[in-house]
Length: 508
Image 1 (cartoon, rainbow, N blue to C red):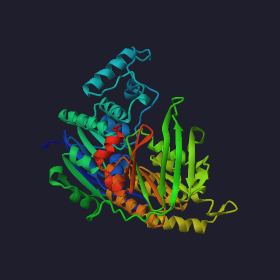
Image 2 (image 1 turned 180 degrees about the vertical axis):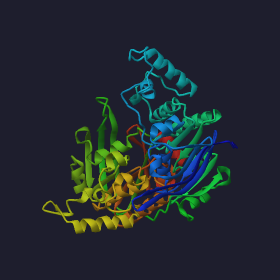
Image 3 (image 1 turned 90 degrees about the vertical axis):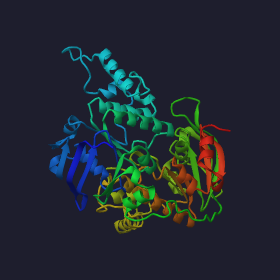
Image 4 (image 1 turned 45 degrees about the horizontal axis):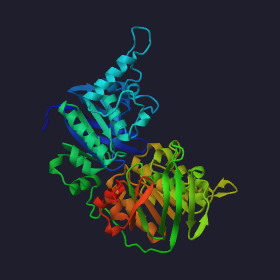
């Protein structure tokens, strides 16, 4: 076990209006160590990382930060970066149209003398050497948009290390990676450890935390609850530390009371957005009944998200097929029409498609149901406030007020706002695309319980998920997609992770 300290925080305290986000947080990071940082959404992880990365200056919090024994005061991200701290955010910060080299050295390109002209040969040579050093299977000349998400993640890490970073903060680094890309990332992390790079690894995927970390620090309600060697923890013990209680049933699936067919899709196609004549969804046929949870599994790129987005009317000019609601054929040419027919879609990317980040929590919750909350286009404020209060309470959304800007909430609470927005429309069919991605353990259980409650009320649920235990535990039936087609259908009890992966990877 490494013992030499590289980073230490003492009594870090940070307040927001009406909320203490961090309360005397102290932790230590050792040289060459991977320290897991876990906790529920709203526990304070993101706020702490923003302090370490300089996003919040030392004027805006109390407490001390020490790097290799020296106290540091960061006025901004450049100070933190200069001190050797780099953060890799969940949403990658790369420019798709530029090459790998141009992204890594953006704003720091080598120049030819004092001419101001970029030395292209030196730029690409430096990048190739860096990629080779880190064993990243990419070319310096490739455009970022042509790389997989996993390789883009590695380019972000290469960019951070090009600043001579001693400490990497990895925030949910595997949220959009395939299983093979996760293995490649972990191999890279292990090689960085050998060169004494220290890492803080933030993740809600506890299996990964156990696999890659040396110690784990648990935050709850803005406080450090405990730090223990990973080998001394169990999954159940770690969850109990995070939520303050034992969670006996991680997947509380209720018995399905299946009714009539709520949604039927026949001969459904979706055009490829870039390749003329190609399809991302090919001749899809399926049904989902009232009170049923239909799981859809498959690898990234299998067409899962495109399928539900097209059903919801997101690509009316690029999709074709038949859609039936309660046995009646309908035509959906826009999300507005989909809502009126009783469909709701919780999208995979909540920030891009699920929320208006600059608007208030309450405004986001009622955004899709304003028509029924209005009279002659005038919003009935009393009824709107009642609806907002109802969903904040029932979904346990942690927010200081209705009026709080939704961007100030933790990721899990933002996800609950998205779900509340669609529940307020009283849907007949709820389409969930990765509903628990980036959500803590306790919030996941709450979402599962909510799904059970909705199915008891007769709502049909279609759930896309890359989390196979989630699909297996919560689904009554499972469709496995591969290259835009349904490769296999299982009754929930017949499926296993191995069977799903076999068909998801093209097995027949």
